[in-house]
Amino acid sequence: MKQGSLAGRTTGLRPAQRRRLERLCHRRHPEAGLAEQLCLERLADASDDLELPLTLVVDSRGLCRLLWVGPLQQSGGLLEKLPGSQRRQGSDLRLITCCSRGMALTPGPQEGVVGLDLDPRLWLRYSNRPDRGGQWPALLLQTAPGANPPWQPVEEGPLDQLCALPPPTAAAAPAGAAAAESGERGERVLLLALTPGDRAAAQRQIAELEGLVRSAGAIPVGVVEQRRSQVAPQTIWGEGKVAEAALEARRLRATLVVTDRELTPVQGRNLERLLDLPVSDRSELILDIFAQRAGSAAGRLQVELAQLRYRLPRLLGRGRSLSRQGGGIGTRGPGETQLEKDRRAIARRIERLQRDVRQLGEHRARLRQGRRGLRHLALVGYTNAGKSSLLNALSRSQGRQAVLAANQLFATLDPTTRRIELPDPAGGAGEPVLLTDTVGFIRDLPPPLVEAFRSTLEETLAADGLLLVVDLSDPSWPEQLRTVHTILNTLGSGAPRRLVANQIDRCDAAELERARALEADALFVSATGDLGLQHLRQSLRTWPPPAASAGEK
Image (cartoon, rainbow, N blue to C red; front, side, top):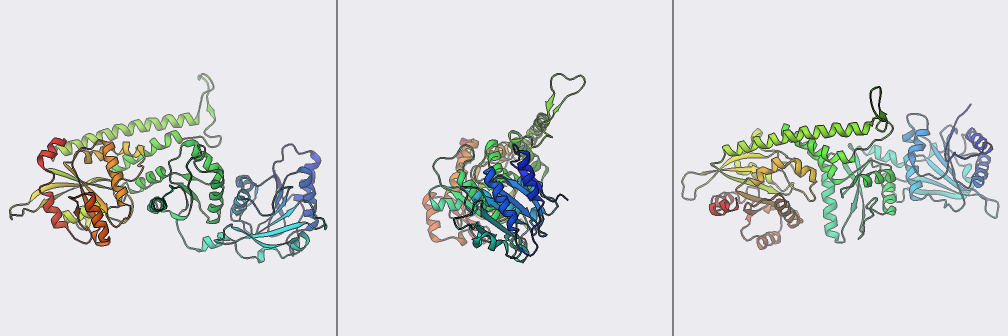
């Protein structure tokens, strides 16, 4: 009865060579030992004849499920050929590789990636030629949780000694079991970063990317970073670093790779092919967070528009379903591909969403017309700087009326306007002022997101004054402040700006002096600690000056 299948580089095999390999597929290995030595010696003869490595995939019963011809480069073909629904979990599989001339017994990075995808209990590797003493050099490897490299040697010696070892069912559980027992829920993400030479700046960038991943509901499990002056146009990262990332992803059982740079469609495809894993860039990650946070109809509308604008140039047919050409009676030419139909459907949807966004902008303009008699200030700043907490503290909003304030990136998307009373030092009636909490900014904000949220950002552009909120407890607040100024200048904002230094109860005195040296008229508060809020209200009563506000407009 046929037990295993033959796959890999089988094109061009002579009939005698194919029959020889198929006979090796049908041999059964002993249950009391790791492998049958005679079968492996014949496999070595076939490998020497073909000048190619050969790999056997053997199950717990000693049956050969697959004989792979050629090097282990991509795991997709192997996994498709293995029978059973549990092929990806590895079960009690064992790998036996006969290395061709020039190959090392220790697996290379790409071979290690394929081996980890198969997740066998043990991996036996041996040479296809005996040494001068007539012994076949062999090496037995096993995955070790947390080890680097993940494939660790268990025993090295002659092939006959290793073949007599007990079957792999007696071995320890592979690294996949440790990951499954950890109890972590959510997608496991490996971060791929291209960092600058400044180590402190690199750590801040990686920390921000980890925060984005956690805000999206995933679990960052590891980081692979590279510092290089010139980027590779095909993948940005070097070939060796991409191979290292693929191996690290398997070692950490990552299911997704997120890059800190925006990828072109070609770069994304190349990375997915080399890593053999789904890849998302930083812009797509931010769009996913916005899609999760969008609570209102206007927010969902703008997020969908941004996502479609981002994905339209990246829409590619995978498989035959998007490459078939449609035609029929009455049509001319070969017809059009499914990919072209999908692009046209997305273009129509984008056009419809653009009309809705324009209507949304006109609606918000009418709302601003109704508030024309009141002074309007806007809270602007980096994401998670404390803008929502400051709005709640100044407006004394509690319960359902309070704006969501959470310690996460992009907790709120929709602009929220509250009417607050600024006290009169002379004891007179308070002055009503409109205060708006806007969406947070971030470094390298995706252009599709800025364009889609332009109607929302108009709330910032129409304000009489901008309060730039920074979190002094974050060491990178000066860089964040520069990012906010850059984005406001890009949007064409000319309103007066004033720095509001938040979280003064959680920072050092040096940070207070640093902020005072940067902005002499900075206001120092703690939204959660109720510090400096009264002074902030009094300062806003005379800021911005009416002449400056009118002149800017």
